[in-house]
View 1 (cartoon, rainbow, N blue to C red):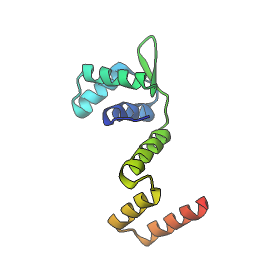
View 2 (spheres, rainbow, N blue to C red):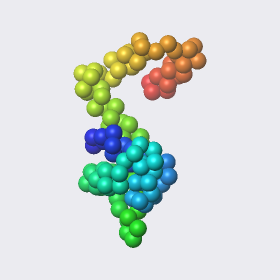
View 3 (cartoon, rainbow, N blue to C red):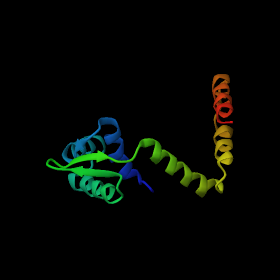
View 4 (cartoon, one colour):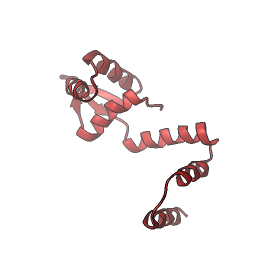
Length: 117
């Protein structure tokens, strides 16, 4: 499932706060990024259509149906396929080449890799 940045904003609120009314989501996004109520409701509708959230009535309460981890996994797979030819090691290499890692970071990575083996 491809989640666009606008949809991610809705999901982030729900992951953080749990079940939330569409009205409260609209108010939060108005205050945070200046979205109109109409914009928020349009994006909520897209999330409903994708079955990323469900609607409970009365009160138009939005309930998230996908975990943050599932969205991260899907988005990471898309990135790896699109930018690294489906090769996850190339993504890791790209990150490692661009960022200075401390000895602690390197040890943690080694431990993670060891645990996966």
